[in-house]
Image 1 (spheres, helix red, strand yellow):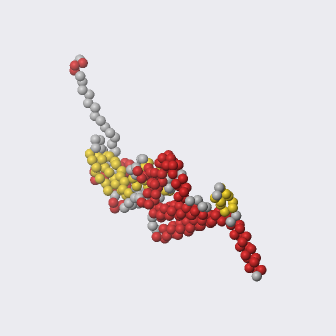
Image 2 (spheres, helix red, strand yellow):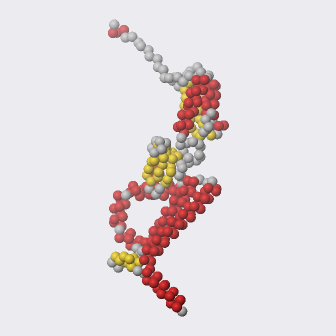
Image 3 (cartoon, one colour):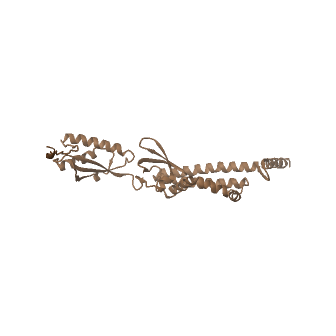
Length: 290
């Protein structure tokens, strides 16, 4: 009997504590129970997202699927869960979102006009995450700059260019402008090197030397698809093109530089000359001046 009384007193004390008013604004009051429930929702949201992320990335590592797709899925789910959690917290605190939005409609219109570009970036962020045409790890060409995407946020994305400089990109810039995605269809891309040799050079020897030069580089993929073309008769040279595939898209300029060094060395060994532009100047005398 005494134990039941003690237990009842204890439960009554807990109920009184939870119903304790912390803040009162007009007719609206905030109790300990509301604060406790809000904190619990926040902690539960963090735990739920942590478990979801851990399971999602574990599945990605096991199935060796695309990391960018996994990142996009997690970001979308994260935003949805946080919106639900915030709505629940407002409801627990007694704040009616419909009344709040209706009362601040005029303010929202003014803020919307002032933050139109920001809202455009946010909508573009949802488009990028949902369409997944651009993912984390993709290599993009934006405004003449080559960047690798490191993070896609709700308003902006972060990338790293070839000079190891972080670039903050508004999402609307990606969705509304012309952007080249070097990684969209495949992880390897075909590149070309243009080179000219002097007239009178052995064309077959030049074709063979260019192919051997590409084969010597370790980053060249699909060596069976290396192609050398006799492109054109230039003003001062016979023009050739060396075409090859490489997975090192982000550092391709260094790959090209290395191949050019190999080509130059092999041209010297095989007595193949790279000409410089020449121009013949004919001077005609003017007899009328005499």
